[in-house]
Length: 226
Image 1 (cartoon, helix red, strand yellow):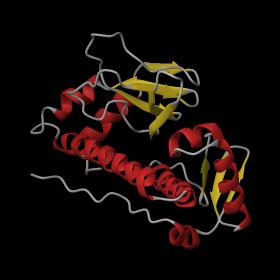
Image 2 (image 1 turned 180 degrees about the vertical axis):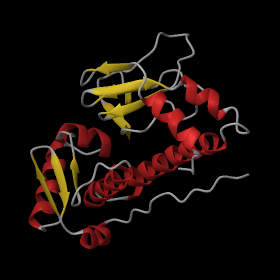
Image 3 (image 1 turned 45 degrees about the horizontal axis):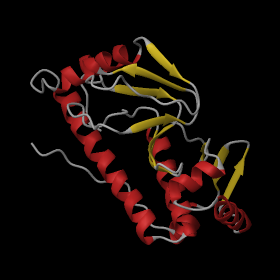
Image 4 (image 1 turned 120 degrees about the horizontal axis):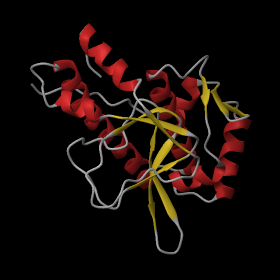
């Protein structure tokens, strides 16, 4: 997100090596109501922001991957928001990062990165709104896969266009607003077109150019306003 000095990089390494909390799959990453929760960063695993309706229907609003924070606006808490672990998730306390971000004269790189990370989070949420509002099932699935490839690549989790893909068909349906049957048919079509390989929880994008023709995904372009 931003250039860091050697001292800032060391600061973040130490923050990331702090005491970790482990969350089992499907568990809720919540804090005691009424408390101002310290920001937590994901070190490993996948999670999602979730909105559940009274009748049990749910919408996975946004996926959260390693390197990302559960609360993008470090000084603001949204009541009622829920984060659920998709896989085993390991998080660390990001209070020290929040404090450093508040001292731009001492930690200019961290302050800039935190601001850009919040803007990046909002840009990805906008992408999700467009996916759900204007794209076909085929386009939604491909757009999501291209986004996840981009996000995983940024943190070194992509190898030979392949990365871990722990989402079940049910979770994909809750994320993309599709029935499980529709998800299954869409995945089968992408396989038949030889655009993807999905095997043993790992997704390989076989034809990046072909996928780009199906659905447009543009990584967020962000600049910090000085």
